[in-house]
Image 1: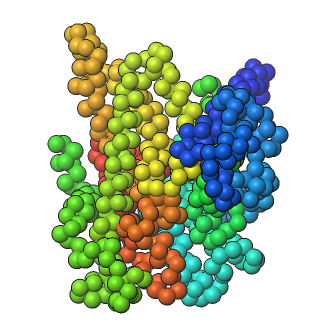
Image 2: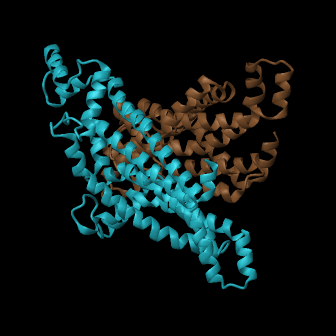
Image 3: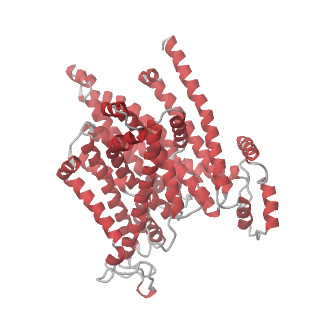
Length: 317
Length: 282
């Protein structure tokens, strides 16, 4: 890297990282306002879930206990200062610290997402490459038809059908929970399913586009072997695929909500949905905030990564 | 009209359009077409096999599945269409304002959209449903809230693209008011593209609404809704697995038709568009 370029790169990174700050403030503010705007009074909800009759006196004392009697901005600042220290308040339902609950559920979700990611890579890369190599063949057409259907199928329906087939009919994997060692296979595959379709298409179309570029023509003219030419094409298509994959990771983690609920998987998605039913606001708040921060951070990493890799993006800035 | 001429040659697109129209018409005339009351339970005939009076059989409460499917169009499909129409109305209004009236107002709208877009739509929907509580109205609102910013940005960039066209400059020079140019020139120009996006997104909204109803966050029982029907079918999977088929297939068919029609419309409206890239974006 030249000096000017290095300076430019550092400048870009600093700018990009500074832009994170107003975004984090906005996100935290949004997560906080959500609860304030909610039609149900948190104090009343907190009383109800503990089966205390919400008399006016009880509501007043609960409001005081939850700090709801203070002015809006004081509450926001106090909340955000506590959150930075990992204190999201206590659950209305079982009075346990929300952060602790969240951290207990997180490994299950991460486990599910990592296995799903492995599925995505190991299924879509070979199929995508084969489709690009044998473009227009029967196999390619078949895969494209499958992709089209996969994007229109509700994932929860596919999940139900696969549970019925593999668990109820054949008894190969458990229908729910994560006790057995093989119980992760079905939920992670269903989580991966829509992404597999997307990535097969992305890899295939990217490689086909690259095939028409001049460097391929040149490589052909030089008489390089087909295998080696495809290796070049694959490597050149990889950047876009990796960037997309980086953006898919937070989506996988956030998208596990449906799968976790179908399979009774004890992760954060299920925690959040049960919190919605219980009107357990601190948990919803923590979930929204943590997921949004995850997105912002992944976005930042992907942006810096692609700027490092692609000089054109640096100049465009 | 040109679009229609071209679309007529695309057999698959016509088929998709036909499927969507017939589903919508079936939904409108549901009371006349459904053989039974979708809510009427009759425990005596629960899990009935397909017969003449119950073409798709009955569920665990003896309700007619076909009738529930037909009435389900009114919830699943119609609510998705309403969601899309509202999203587009909001997106077009703000997009036109942000694109045409630059300066503080436009910039403000834009920054606000950027902020909203930093929230992934999945999280935004859960956050809003979490705040308002379960219920179909809240799900519709959450879907609109998660999507309007994207439309606003999209339409703004379309407006910027078209504002530089010579006929707009001419209209300005000729002394037409901003409002007149917005309504008479810019709006018709971007309408086609918006239509494509909306068709594609209707499928997405249908998937969303049925997924949330499946989780129990959207339509509440006993209202017939396809996602809700799958949720009920899930609990009796071991007794009667075939109940999972009809609602799932219904969702699959309508979403596939929307996606296909959207793709064809895009190719027809935008001949310069590279079909390889079109496939990538979907």
